[in-house]
Every structure is written in C-alpha cells, then in structure tokens.
Length: 266
Image (cartoon, one colour):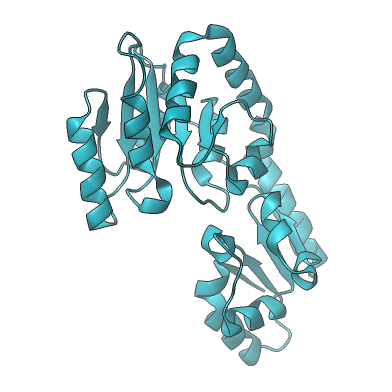
C-alpha cells in the first residue's frame, strides 16, 4: 500500500509505484492546493487520481468540487490535534498561526486589530516564517506601524500550541484552505476561532459558525474582534461551540477513520 499526501506533487510517484507493483493499493490525501481555488488537475495528476483506490479530503466541502467518478471513492478524515494547556493571557490576545504568505492573509488581521476602538485593550500576535519575501515585507511593515501587533517569527510545535492555548481567539483569515490544521489545533485547545467564510473553514466549523466574516473584509473582522473582546455572552458562546467540536479532532477519531479505510482496501 502507498499513502500519498498532495495529489499534484505525488502524481509521478503514484504512477511509478503503479507501474512497478501492479497490485499496490493507493490512497491519496488531497491538499488544499489540489482543490482550491479551482479543481483543475493536469493530465498526469488526473491519471494519478484515477489510479488511486481511495481519496481523502480534510473537510467535507472539498468533495463537492470533485467529479462523480472521483467523489464516489472519496471520504473525509479531519486532521486531529492535541493541546498543551497554558493559562490565558490577562490582556485579550488574538493569534494568527500561519506563515507569511498571501493566501494566509495575515495582513488582514493586522489591519483589523487597528480598526478596533481604542478603548478596547487588545494584542495581536503573528507567528510564522517569512516564506514570501515581498509579501513578508508588507506584513512586517504593517506590524511595525501597528501599536497592537507583533510578529514573533516561526515557533516550534510545542510553543505554538502553548501560545494558542494562552490566546483568547485564533484568527484564520485565509483566502483559501483545504482544511487548516490550525483549526483543529484551536479546537483541541478550546480557543475560539474567528475565520474567513471560505469552504475550507465552513466545512470544518459549519455554515452557522458565529465567528465568521467575509474573506478579505478587515472591517468585518474588526467588528467580530470588538464583540468577542467586549461581549462576555458572545465569547462564552464561541467557547462552548468550540468545545463541542473537540470529539471531531480527537486523535482516536482520526485513527479509527484510517483503520476503517485501510480495512476496506485489504
């Protein structure tokens, strides 16, 4: 059996393995860029997807974009996560855990936090590596002009989980996601999520998630941040909704889903 991650990047390996071992069973996990912004695989990727015995998506809305012949052999397995507990900061803290890339839109969080009324005490932490020089400079320049924002660079997995637990909200402002691991990590930590209303987020959190805003809308995110920081009932509702999703991201849940899939392919 061969399990691959990212249909496009693994296509050549899938076809090579199939040529070398005719009976091999192949599972391909679809990454966000396989599906978004549009599902348009190359000829090689199409051949690899057709050869796969099973496809796995990280959230159910991704399956809606697949043609019927691929959808019928696809299923969703949500990424699991664990948390490392740390007391919440005294000051209301929002965190963005994402590398400085245009698709992740961290600049939007910086713009939004500066639109929050001055009498609302708030801190924004950006954590992630600068992977795109031009965009990274844009973000760091915006942070330098913001009295409420800081960029702390890349963190180890352990430290990032601690920072997530210590924050009041996790912002996921991306323009596209396949099913962000940080969403699972925030759920595991019990840290409410404020996110863009894109399929990768609604597929995990639901269409009625109270902490969603239109993608790219800094003003709408600012209003959500203000409400979350000042309305205790709304914050408590977000916390309760987050905790209710924790069974979905439990490691045991993901392990069982993989056991069942692999058993089907024996």
